Length: 544
Image 1 (spheres, helix red, strand yellow):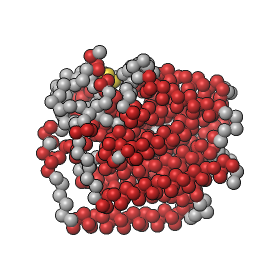
Image 2: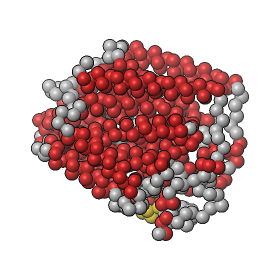
Image 3: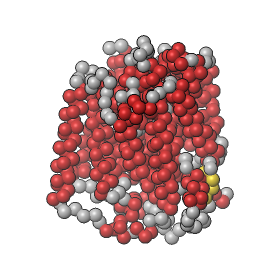
Image 4: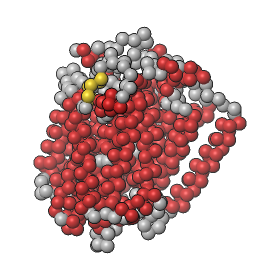
C-alpha cells in the first residue's frame, strides 16, 4: 500500500515498522508525506492542526480516567473548592513532561521502552516494560471497576456491562485503520465535556471558584489526609503510561519533526481540557454536597452518583455515571494500547493501528488479552477490588520518578535527539519537577508502609532537602563553567528533517561515575519500594 512506503531519505530510518511511515491520516484531516509547503495563512495552519490533533489530547483526557474521576470527586466532596489550585500547578508539569515525549516520538521514530533498552541496557529496558505491564494491568482493572460502578447506577449488572465494554474496546481498536480508531477516541474526548452541564446543575458561584483557583489553601488545614489526597491528585494526573502511549502514538500517526509545533499545540490543548474537566468535577461535588450530610463522607464513585441523584435529581446522577463510564473507556483504551505498543517495540513485532489483525496478530492479541484478563478479574466474586485500586496509586507513585529520570536523560542524549535536545532552562524546570515527583513517591511509599507517620512533617522535610540539593547543584553547575555544546545548535537549520539514525549505528552513551551511582541508587530504591509494597499488599489481602 502507498501508506506503508518507507520515506525516501539519505539517512537510514530507525523506525521498526514500515507502517509508521507515510501519509498522516488523522481523524480530522490528511497530510501527505510529500507535503512540504509552508502554512502561511491561519486557515492552512488550523487545517494542519486539525489533522495532527489526537495523540496529545487523547493522552491527557485519558488520564482523567475512572481513578481520576473518583479522586476529583473526593477532593470536592471532602474539601470543597479548596484544592482547585493544585490543578493549575499541574498544567506546566503535564506540558513539560509530554513536550519532551513529543520530541522523542517525532524525532526518533522508536518507542519509549525500546529507547530505554538500547541506551541504558537490557535490565532497564525489561524493567520498564515489566513494571509498565504490572501497573497498566492493574490500572485497566480499575477502569472496569469504574464501568461496573457507572452502569450499576442504571441497574445494569456487571456481568453484562463489563463484558460489553471489553468487547467494544477490542472492536474499536482492531479495525486496521488508525483514522477510524482516532475518530472513536475523539468522540470519547468530546463526551468528557458532559461534566460542564453536570457542574451547571450544581449551581456554582464564580467568586469562590476563582478565588480557590488562584489562592492555595486546604479546607480544615494541612493534615496527613489532605496531603495524601493532593498526592493522589498529582498521581492520577501524571502517570508513567502517558510517556509510553503518546510517544508510540505519535510514531504510529507518522508525525515527523516538521509537525512538532502542531503536536505541541495538541498537547497543550489537551492539558487545558484535562484540567477543565477535573476542575468541573471538583466544583460539581463541592457545591452539590456543601452544607449536607454528604459533605466529608466520600465512599467511591458509585456513592457519588447516588448522592448527586439525591441532591440534584436523577439527571445529575445519570450524567455523572455517563462521565464515569466514558472516562473508564478512554482510560482503558489508551493504557492498554500503550502497553501493546511497548511489547511490539521490545520484541520487534509489527505494532501499528494501520495494520489489521492478520498483519499484526501479536499486537492485537496482547491488547485483547490484557482487556479480557482485566475484565475477568472484575467479574470474580469477592475479588479484592479495593486493594487493587489502592495498589495502583502506590505503584504509580513508586514508578513515576524513574520514568521521568529516563525521559530527562533521553532528551539530553545528542545521539538520540541531535538538534532537538533539551535547552538548559528546560533541564532546570524538568529537574525540579522530577525532584517533586520523587518526594511525592517517597511520601506515598512511606505512608503506605507506615500509616502512623506524620505526613506533613515528612513532606516539609523532604522539600527542604530538595531545595538544598537543587541549590548545591546549581552552584556546582555555575562553578564548572559548563557551556552548551555547539553541536546541537549547529544542526538547527536541519531540525525539520533531522531524524535519529538506526539504533545500531549510535555510539554507546558514556556514563560518569556520578550518573552510574545515581542509577544504581535508583535501582536500589525501586527494588526495596516494590518489595515493601508487595509485602504490604499481601498483608492487607490476608487481613493482617
